[in-house]
Amino acid sequence: MRLRIDLAYDGTDFSGWAKQPELPTIQGSLDEALATILRLDEVQTIVAGRTDAGVHAMGQVVHVDVPDDVDPRTLAMRLNSFLAQTAISIHSVREADPGFDARFSPIFRRYEYRITDTSSIRDPRTRHYTLWMDEPLDVTTMNAAAQSLLGLHDWTTYCKAREGATRVRELQRFEWVRDENGVLVATIQADAFCHNMVRNLVGVCVAVGRGRLDSVDAVVLRDQRVRTAAFAVLPPQGLTLAEVGYPDAAELALRASESRRRRNPV
Image (cartoon, rainbow, N blue to C red):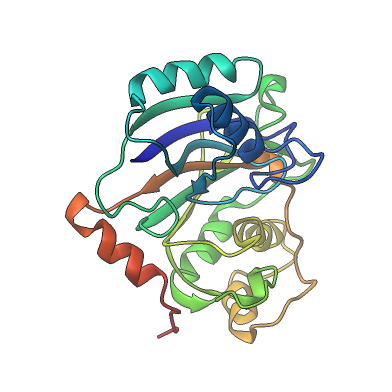
């Protein structure tokens, strides 16, 4: 039986999602909990989106294949009990629809990045989830840069290279707003993201907001398709995976098949 697990975590004290020898990771903690509770030698969770060290999640999704006699509701309670002393919370566990693949079935991933600048009220309680900057940022020019980047493109400029991995993605939504405390909140949504893409996209907008780049430079740099020192990749603590979206149940298998194909930019 394939299970879908929805979960959240504070990534501050973890070395990212993926299991690593001798390091605390979200996957390592979750797989250990599952194996212990189900009395299995090993389990292998498949995640919707691997998060880096220090990155948080409110809407992460994984799937795992388990024996048919496992009760999802009981498993959810036991997982939360097992993980009670960690920064991981299980929202729900349920039997997955036919064709569901946590990694390949999504139609979008949505992230948020939070920045406190000199126009914002600093809340020390959120210091692990917000980047603090000691200068003003121009949200209008940042939004202009963000909006100009939308669409299906090769994101080599904004990605950390991985052998054999495509860098073609569809950026579906990218916008900045100030919340009630003046904190800058970016919403970034795409069908998928390549490694470090979100923090690089935020980085180029911050360079624009500081006046170090023009808003049009975001597209110029993207279309050059080369890594650049024109902007910095921003730290992980301001980043949260907010939501993973999936199609209707009847379209899950088709979506997973389509996502495995290498995409070309228009």
